[in-house]
Length: 230
Length: 112
Image (tube, rainbow over all chains, first blue to last red; front, side, top):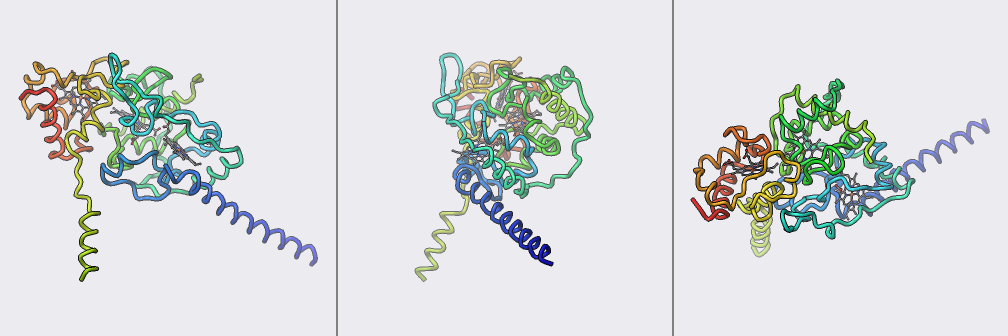
């Protein structure tokens, strides 16, 4: 009986502290992230609103990011978009062509390892996706890098805005050689099918890629993510 | 009554009467390849196998009708047998917005 009481006290304390941890982690997001990121929907509907945003939406982080990537990136954030969020605010005319204005690109705030765990837990609970996302969108079939690159570059022109390896490709979009490390495969399929379903004012055009080719493109991103990039 | 007019006023101020102009849409969507000055020198061009059109080039721009410009913006380069690198913008902008961009292109090239 005594042991039973002790056990229930322990369980009660455990339950209480996990509630406070959950409260602390969403407070962490509010305090340290909400000044730049939207933690609640809906997604911006007008250009005016979308183009004032300082950072990508996080209110559907739980269906977008891989948790393992989140917790390590938040400790040591690196640049994902070579020209920052909303490239047009971070460029200047250069001698021959436009250049990225590095002075307008601050470092992303970093968290301690334990804060990053808390933040990642809280982020994975944010699942208010602007569009239906089915599980199992990605077939899981693989593709060779060389064939994948043809699909990505030659047939669909995706490389114009995305780097497929460090220093090679377009600069206005996020680097894609790490995309499948960062992002869930089902999200990748859905986003390529319609960027506007996720963000009506997305700077990425919709090319209406055929379903079979969307699968190939995501398989290519998965293959890229397995390479050792320096 | 005063409250009602305040309410109406705030309604007018906050309703999105806002539609992005041709120039604003050009800045958001076209600068990345066609450049801040519309001269084809955007940040993306270094590894592109076909270079974006210089929209300030009078000669090549006056060779195109407004209808042709509208078509290539809406449906992309492939629709007029040009490069796949010029994307289709139909899902991003309304026809009216694309028409406004065509007008803006005419300003950039100072041609018709």
